[in-house]
Length: 378
Ligand SMILES: [Zn+2]
Ligand SMILES: [Zn+2]
Image (cartoon, rainbow, N blue to C red; front, side, top):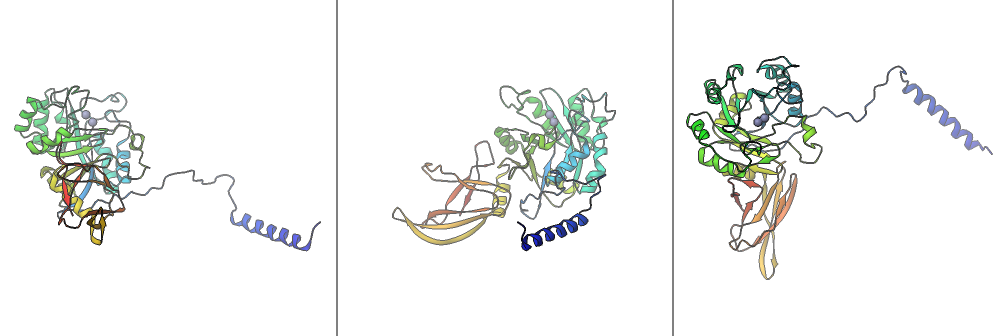
């Protein structure tokens, strides 16, 4: 049975439907929809500046369809922009170009295709190439070159010489790649010759899914710049799940006088870089320690208490950055192996004996040598 209040409800509903219908008058010929399409924003990676330098995020090793990659050069720029990178080098192989019957080009084409997009996105794009030889000497990236074409040569030494003549920064890529060094990561006599000629300035400590701790020792002994690069061939989020919290490609942090190509080049030749892959940081100890100190806010002890009859003080460590620091108390008996994880954008409380002026902690996810973790003090 219909009551007056039912009639009222029906009338209000009808009026609402008429208004809603007129507001949402839809063109039945075309409706713009939004089925989970990605926003076109850029991720910001919070990594502080140190020593008066700007901290730039770089990837100095990537491929496109112009060698054996699966991606067009402009897409490499857009991937890097979305991930918050500042500087990239497209380094297609000179000697290995499986798509060359379909893509007619020379060795500068990938750079030239990507250049406008890089300018438009404010990404520093370096002209680069990968000299791709059997071991020894293996693969080398030449960066900041003027012209890739003359670097094509039968003789790898002539290739490196030509790159150096163009003022290149040259790095040895994936020195421990199992396809080329199946038994161990070996430094060959030929590498000494290349180094002595001034044709090697850096080396990849980390490349795509692997890293080579021993190479950190080479960097210290032979004064080489540390790199961590993606060597990406597929689309970046084909290989990395960048939707995960804190996920990022392997990258090289560059501490540059300014955010420019000249700034990057000066920093690379001055060895001011750290490798950053997963939650690991690798490279010179002073850079790691300065980065820790610039990242972590240590709040002075806010209370004292007693633990097992001993006075202890409580200290807050605050980490507003995208870096992770894993600490282990550095004790003489070496018994304490408790990991203290200071995750990105978080805070922890550590408890240290009140009678100790300083407590030492090893940063076990940071490496300055194959067996060395920098120590911080509170
Ligand atoms: Zn390679
Ligand atoms: Zn490569």
